[in-house]
View: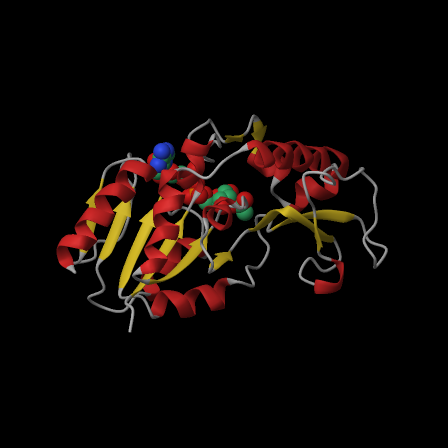
Length: 235
Ligand code: OAD
């Protein structure tokens, strides 16, 4: 049976694909205050601004490409049972070929009902040809169509399936997240005792000390190259 590797990824995973992190830019996400574009209050205060912000982000996403780090994670599926738990709303893991991706904070390429974002009847997949949402457009239930993004303060319905994956990990790898945002950051704690934990990040990250913690102080692509070598040595 293949060993299971679980990845927990954050904004740093997509930096080399041209996206910015959340906490490295004076609290600005792509030049907007995070609270304005990623909170329920921000949405209620100005749905037009929020709709246009995600239209812009979506256009950026169609032009972006997975980086070497995304590709190496996907390639590990040849030898491992791989699950990716991502806080990212881009689809770069999927486009790199990863087949088992759980999005904790929603998906940029989708829109949904603002009454019940997880009502599957009203989740729509957008495409490069049909990408922009006209502000004021309604979902099938009559509420405003909103980006399929988990805003701050909202529950994270994908947490339980993600925690179940984390608990099955033989190897757990954290890449490009400052581990500031809960409950996603708490997923490391679901790994079984003794599971090797690798942390790939070019900057220091505050993480509980685990006896089997290995730090790889590099960006996502270089760090993944190093991890793959390490796994080859250990197998
Ligand atoms: P942060 O911006 O908090 O952290 C990004 C991490 O990426 C930092 O630790 C950086 O050092 C690291 N980093 C920078 N460049 C890197 C590179 N080239 N390779 C690897 N790592 C690199 O982003 P997240 O932890 O993902 O939520 O933020 C978590 C959540 O907060 C996001 O999902 C978002 C945000 O508010 C929502 O939108 C709901």
